[in-house]
Each structure stands twice: as structure tokens, then as C-alpha cells.
Image 1 (cartoon, one colour):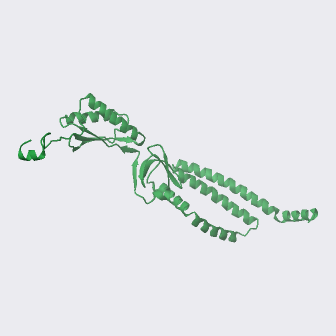
Image 2: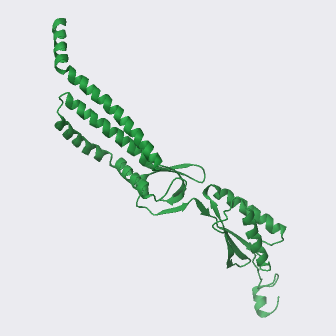
Length: 281
């Protein structure tokens, strides 16, 4: 094909399809602009309604993609591309993709379930499937926890749905026990514990801390101290509380006894077993 024939073919193509191509481009540009405007408007509306961030991001993306795909279909139809076979092909391909990515889709469905049912929120402390931590993010496919050792745990959402979940919320209860001697003034010991809890900056005043005798041990009266603290202060509050109890009890001469055992010798030293039976050494 020489240059004249090529030029003639191009002119003929532009004459026949030029206006269709221009119309398709106009439809695509208009669709992209409308999709962006609708997505921005929807995002502002979701923010005003205080919709959860994952739902807001997903909805905005779906709106933008739907409008743009509709504009693309109209543009292809404008160019004379048959739409029905393409839709059928997309459907067949979608089935194959769905089977290949079933775990990904199950995570997505589980993520939407978590977002809508709200079994936990960002900032709460949860214990599930053998792991625990503070929820730092809830995404469409996974949820991230911050472990007490400051490591990050990423859990696929499908692992969370349908499991027994312990949600502590934004506060946790400490469980500290201390033993005092039986000759201790119990009222003085209990007052000391309640006083140091009321002066602690990490212990919450509401709910009120629980302080009381839980058991009578072999060598001590066991007192349980159960205050509530925020999730962030849990480990620090345990260390501070134990140190403060020890210091206050020492300052008030409240004895914290150690386990003791009384050992009795049936046969005194130097007496044989046979001699003991006959009453002689």
C-alpha cells in the first residue's frame, strides 16, 4: 500500500467514524468529570453523616467506578462496538475471577459485616482466636491490632466473623492480689489500698475500684485489688500499683508475710528408729 492509498483509507475512516470517535471521547471525558464530582459530593455527605471510614471509602470508589464504567459502555456503543457479547464475556470472566479469589471476596464480605454490625471499634481492646490487642484499623480485607508488646497483628476479616470475641472496650480491669499477716489491722490495710487507688493518676474513678478479701491463705489474708484503667495505661498501671502497695505497706508497717512451713521431727537426731520403738538410744 502506497502513501496515496494510505491517505485515502485514513480520510475515509475519519469521514465515516470521526464524529463517532469524537462523541465517544466527549462521553468519556464527561463521564470522568461527573464521576469525580459525584464521588467528591458523596464523600462530603458521608463525612457530615459520620459514616465509618471504610464504608465511606468503599462507597466513594463504587460510585466513581460505576459512573465511569457506564460512560465507557456508552462510548463504546457510540463507536459501534456490540455491547451484548462483551457483557456476556465479562460475566463469564467474573465467575472465573470469583472462584480464583474466593478468599479475598470472603474477607471483603466479612469486612463489610464487621463495619455494619460493629462488634468492635477502633481504639477498643479485643481478644479473639487466641490473639489480643487494641484495634488500630478496620479495613475492608483485614483488621490490625496493636499487641501490648507494641507489635502489630494483622488478621484477615474472615477469621474474625463467627468467632467468639471478647471486647474489653476502651478500659480494662486490673487484678492485683496482696497478702497481709493475720495479725494485721484489716481495716487499716483496706483503707490504705483504697487511698492509694484514689490518688493514682492512672486508675479511673468510675467505675469504682473493687477492694476486698478474697481468701484466707495458709500464711496470709489475701486481698484482691481490681481497679479499672484505660487500655493504654494497663501495663504501666500494674507496675505502678505493685510498687505503690509495697511502699505504702512498708511505710505503715503492714506485714506482707512469705509462705512458711512448720517441720516437726518425729525422731530426734541421734535416736535410731529401733531404739525409738523400744524407748532407748
